[in-house]
Image (cartoon, rainbow, N blue to C red; front, side, top):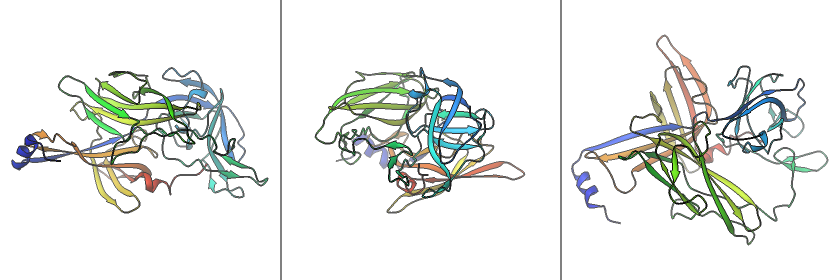
Length: 364
């Protein structure tokens, strides 16, 4: 494909500027609760809770999406006791979490600092990469997700929803920006959403949540919300999670999601005072070392959070018409180190790409 004439003219000026951007998934709170039990028997796969408060119109813990990040702390909003995930649909007062063990036969040691009655639970909308592996009991029974039995041996699998990669968009001169996501295949980018075992996709349903977990705020659909593709016209800068649930011809469903950062030119959705000390890729995965300067609160960047690093290239003050984002890196926080000298603090994070994370995630 040839270079557009305007881009070619801009490139020949020699005035090239590169703008790097670093975005992180923020703390989007689905709800809070308090632990309501005094004894904890291991292996542990659930917490009894009360004082449940949910956001975004959710009516009970049963509405909390599987895979959501969970913090348990000694104070409200803290994560000093436990970081885990929701491993299967919850009930009214039972939060099913990734399994923990003190080294029971056949299970690795993975236990929290100290769990106690009355501790604070925070449930986040962010879904870190987390293993939900099989568990084999001494009786020979095989479970998935710690205690969920296999029911159909894979004969009626759920579809796979694939709506593409994360996005970073900028509000235009009219104060809006259109973001289009699709279940169709995009050559060189992603395969299509698929159903298995001879089934077909029969229905699509789209929605999104903002940083307060409010439903469908900060924009509007252009067209509809029940087609293979959806376009959302955002009019407010911020962080959004866009969801699509697909249903196959046998009634099985799967929900995919994409993170979208919408900025207005002020850098409001970008992190400040950061430096990538290393960024390298090999045949299996990508890894980066990120340093943030200053007093970075523990709920601004946290283990399990995801980063999007991207660059925009401008020639003579204008973006290229084809492919404004010329380089990008996606990484998850796997390690956090905090330092302080006489001047200021700094935090160093190790970021691993998705393939590298497969060897790091705890099992459940």
